[in-house]
Length: 428
Image 1 (cartoon, rainbow, N blue to C red):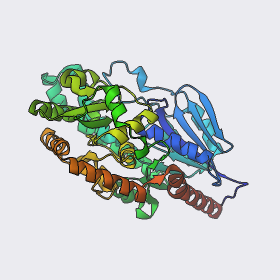
Image 2: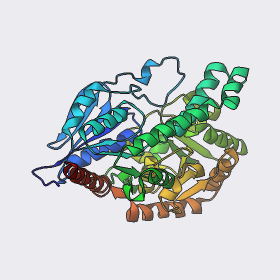
Image 3: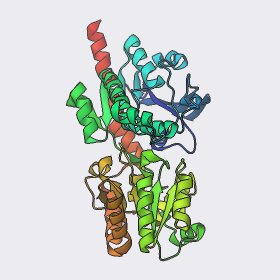
Image 4: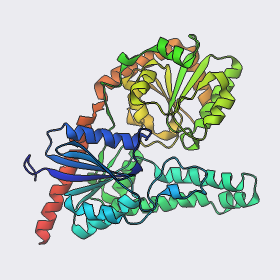
């Protein structure tokens, strides 16, 4: 369909604010945009984010644009906490004016203003629509609906009990989001997924031939065992040399299951197990971490990628306690750095990496996490073998961002655009 004189024009839509402190969803598309800027693919890529209006030219055929939200969740001041803000408007007029110029639209959620606007423009202008799954929004909706009710009304309040247990409001909100996602997927020509359960869900709506895998990439110049500076990290964070260093990377909130990890660490400190936690992230659990773990925790806030690379390569283990992950950029960055990983079984992350011995699966609850951390702390030979497995796995199986762009995304985009063009020609 295309050649270098006629590149495929793609708009990728990420309805989240972009900043240095953004999470993996945003970082993924930033890195894909930079990969496109250095690629010789017949591709012209614009990645849209929500936020103060800006335009950043990365190359002749790659750019990042930000458009102001119509109705941001940041305006809902009564909510006690949201992990990130998005645009709740059903339609984004400014985006709608820009999208008809593209050959293909790629959404990264099925719920908010960018995605819903793309659905309408796709339908009106016969532009093919592709989507990819990055966040388990239905599960997060259930978690934070429950959290909001408990915080605003109180856990012991009879009304809270009625809302949570009788009317099952959090579960119903989750079901609403699943139905909305189903409608969006059915409007798409193709879906890219990571987890097997998401592949089954999309295939049940579109058929398996219209579902493909999307990997996470890695920048080996930033992340790798060459970034190890254990003595320097111990000095900077005041960690005793004989302590086992546990790293957590992500939002410090209930959605990431940080309280389970926190309680397990408390129990092990009471036993005298020499562990130190570095919780690299921001969120409302920061004060509880400091109060409950004291000198045995460091909470540096957001950590820039270059400094984070030192932590991955210097830590003894990464703890992925979240039970609602679709992908895990932290897991990829840790393994390429030679860092062993403990990962929650419910997250579904371990199967994404073929259950590599570099990852040890932990069943839900405080007791399993306590046992897993105790084993890591008391068995240096296990840490050594997992570190070797992490490096071996990453060498054989982890792709670059350029590979992900060319092999996972562009291949699907080109096929979807070509099919749409053929169908349009036949219909006319």
